[in-house]
Length: 346
Image 1 (tube, helix red, strand yellow):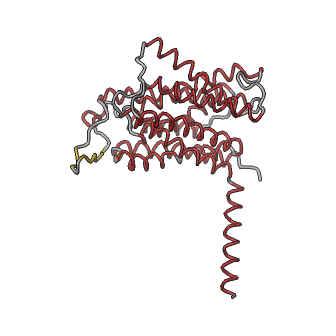
Image 2: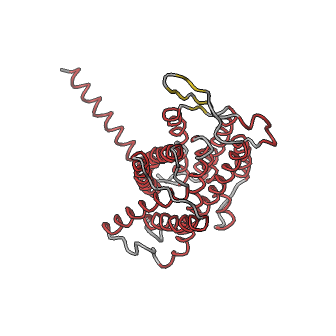
Image 3: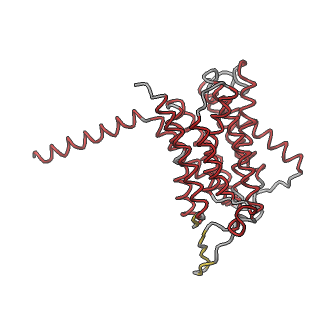
């Protein structure tokens, strides 16, 4: 009888402890959960790129962000959020900047997945907090320390290891991620993801995406609480559709019409997980300090490496692993420094 009572008491204490932890870290858990959906979105994009007649990157942006825009508008009308299309008058120019700069961030990520591994493409996005700190210091007059500058320099070295330009690394630049593709019971030899030049170009586009994300994050900081969080998502999705559509027209890109159920399923999955991820991220950041929220974003590399192994049966090259560790260490160091300088109010 006493044993049963002790077990019940222990169970209640455990549940109470879990609930207390969740209540104190709701924002952190929401942001970390959003990264699962972000990693799943990138897996879907990479899988879509591997199909015959892969969907062009700009077309993919149009499809995905059109779905996001529709979902956002429906949600805002349902919740009665004012000015759902253009946002409040005082911040509309900042919302436009957030939308167009966010387009380059999204395009950079999607394009880089053509030639980079999932983990490499993911870790390059972790340069954004560092570049955002620089932009915040220049534009918003925020504090920027020597520690952050040194972390940025170390991160750049990590990027070089991931890009592996041929003029620096020679034959090592062509080292592919190690994969084991099974076909009819036979293990095939791993193949490189594009040429060294294509890989370097993909890193360049990914870095353009980092600059785009920097503009987006900086504009969000400038907007502050003058607009609803959903206004930012509407601007992001709407201007992504506009910019990508213009790009498709100017380039004369051939529009790929889905003819296989896999295409339709992946396109719908990309739109769905992308929207859910953005909702979780937005709500999480509203409840969390900037430093802790940034640290939760870095969990995506864990999901990326795990999903890369599960879905693509690949392991990153040794130099990519070293570069990833350098960028991760630098980014976490900056986040922890912010936490120590700006402790969360109790």
